[in-house]
Image: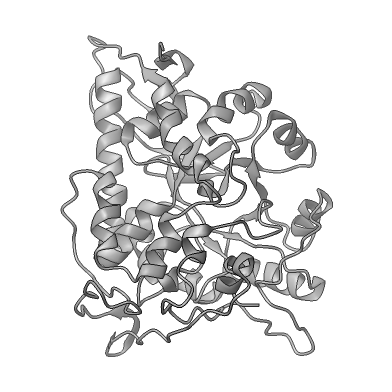
Length: 401
């Protein structure tokens, strides 16, 4: 079943499709696009194909700028959330219930933003969240976010519902990568895709557990009849006799599926979609290498809490025994700082990377990371924290009503 149709199930109607124009490639280098004009407003099915540096004043500006050049469906798919989009808004609002307590006159200068997670050293505590269907965002599909993340020197987390296959994503840039499967209902295909990820060099499996059914993403549903790109799946079975579809996801996930992923790869397993201390502790008990606090960017079950609301309770329950990753609404260096103070090990970016991709390709994505890092350095300098380990609970407090 096509992934876009899954979003339209509530309307019960077929959608129109439009095959995206193929990219113009540099001779003898199939992974390096040449710059072509961006899609213009009103070109409903056209896709941006930019490659340029961006002048970024605030990451919050990128959404409005990207809307001007993205195809209507692509923008709705990225910007929208589930239901009334309460959780989407809460992801942003929750940050403002925590304030930073600066330590002026600390004598600290030139903060060190480097850190590590699962034995991987990264220059700052920001990684890429897994994002599917980037063929709706840029003519080069996942390539800009893969290359831009590589240029930024941090971890890329590849989704299984992509237009590029996992092997091509792994080869598209240097740097460490994790693989995020939506576990297929076909067990043979699930085994194949997990083992392919290991062979391709992915260093961890991120099992996302909050998409056993597609949510009511109403912005997309309202666009039935609007042309959309052809989002053919890149990950299909390669083994003779194995059938399956990356979009035919296992609906009855259990904790046993964590062990299934580990048994067929031997890789660390991270559970993404944790929203309670009880589930975090169970993940630890089941041998997970880390937990990922996430409400899927407000795109799955509406009226669930923001990640930063849940974060302090989860951190208190785990007491630093395993790392905590968190995503949802990160647009400022101050947001990253507050999440670290509340107990996160690293944060993950989603929408800002896609807007950077639409506006500037790989260089746009790299610019998003650089802007966020610069803001984090500024925040750490003013807060008096010389390194990531020094960002602790005492650096923040609850905002007064």
